[in-house]
Amino acid sequence: MNQRENNKSIKIAIHGVPHSTHKILCLFFKQISEHIKIVNDADSPDVDLIDIDFAGGDKILAKQRAEHPERIFVITSLKNKPNTIEYDYLFLKKPLTRERIIQIIMQCQLQLKQPTIQKKQVKAASKPSTPQATVLPATVDKKPASPIKPPENHTRPAEEFNEKGFTHFIGLIPTIDIKDPAQIAQACFSPEDYFLGYVYNAIKISHHKKQVLQVDASWRPLLIFPHSHEIWLDANEHQLRAFAGLKISRTSEGKVRILPVNLQKTKVNQASDKFQNEESFLWKLAIWTSKGRYPQQLDPTKPIVLKHWPNFTRLVITPHALRITALLIQQPQSMLDVAKTLNIGAQYVFVFISGCQALNLVAQIERKPGPEEKTKKKNNASGLLSKLLNKLRAKNHDDTA
Amino acid sequence: MIQHKIIFTGPVGAGKTTAINSISDIAPVKTDATASDMTKGRKAETTVAMDYGVMNLPDGDKIHLYGTPGQERFDFMWDILTEGGIGLILLLDNSRKNPFQDLNFFINAFDDFIKQTSVAIGVTQMDLKATPTIEQYHQELKKLKATYPVFAVDARNSRDVSILVQSLLFSIDPGIEGDN
Image (cartoon, rainbow over all chains, first blue to last red; front, side, top):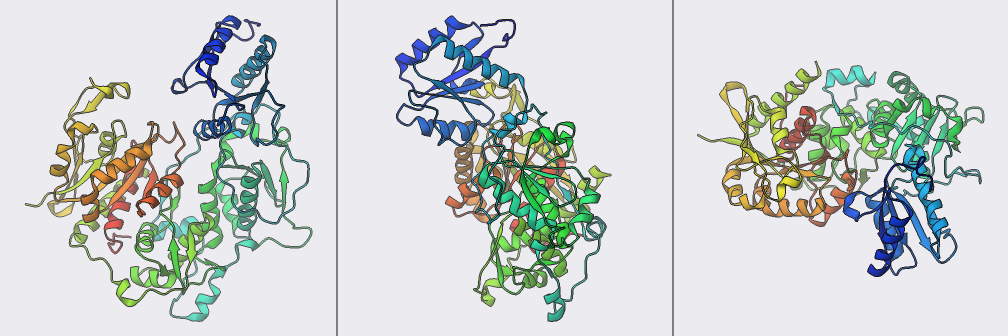
């Protein structure tokens, strides 16, 4: 083995082999190179070597993939390279020979030297959403070839808005009189008419196909990286906010296309700072599209079930969002009832629900809760809690200033 | 005189001391000592009694912030600490071997207190280990028929800790209002 070229130690964990075979392999690897270290799973190996001929080998592979998506996976088998495994791996054909092992070790070392999006690609994917009926071209770049800088951690702390600051952040919020049915009926929007709808569907497809996709809306390119749950967009927040509010024409000239990506031809490598967390992005896009309106698919008079709390520390917190969440978690209520109960503008409920819908956090039910269920939980310490709330918010404000 | 307090709990190294430090008005009173037991594998110093911080409110009111020691051998203190508490902040270290085991352990250990008040859960170290995801924590809580707030938290970030505590307050009473 070329020691000069491959001088970095490589840690390998071997799974799915009997103890005796494990021992033999350890000795074998030791003979090949002193830079190969056989370690336990707890010792953060670089590579997982898994024998899938072993009973339960496929389960071991799935488990390791889920728990350690950052590792390189080498699958060994007597059979030919399995095509049922969807994610990236290296294949080591049995019988294990010195030459085959050296070749595979060199490939591992090459991958380790390249902090590439290729590596990001093999990160564990979440369960795919239901795919949409969008037809994609048959040729798909499953494995981008060029080494590309991995994006840094783009998790941003939450921004928290009061009513005044939020109007400035989001633009025009129409004031809605919830007693006027005509106004309520008009205060809705169809996500499918906006960039939001296309991005939402593209994300679903991308996750289902486990494939990097590009949304081409005759605007700035937007790329979806399903394995790392990230979005890459070559636009700043002002540009996105403006574009989010524009209806997209359904004519052939304005047609939005969802395309597979050849990463070599994108600018991703030059602008890794443009990556954003997928959930935070979708939430932001939804509230900028909503501007205080509710999604057309939802009925503002029917109860809403909120599945769980949104991850508020990583999202833009719209005015009253925490109160609305707490109320809906206690019991389903209609958007209009929430506004009445909390004595807040309906537009704040609508914008919050728009964000939740983009993250699949809401469902609507027919049943209307009886009046006895609506009784608000009274708390004796509410004066104290209000004071504490103001203190926490003031602290946040001071930290921001 | 009634002591208003919020309890911060969770396993060793989850960030309880740091979280209290993030929002306390005083330099927190720490009772850290050099770790000598199995804790030393995770951190050099650990809390052996409890941490203490304060938030001063208008009209002389104070919110006392207490951090429980992470080691289970100190669990006899937990009942005393929670007496009269407003609610519980549970911090979980995502890089530990089995965070769900920690989740279930602490939810069970503080079951009575949570039933009387509420709990908000902050998951730390998600930058070191991304799984379990926040969604998976919600699925785990679903088994307990619970829908508590669960957020990714950087205990050093006062904004994260503030949002976590705010969610606790609204879980106790969604009707409370602050100045907008």
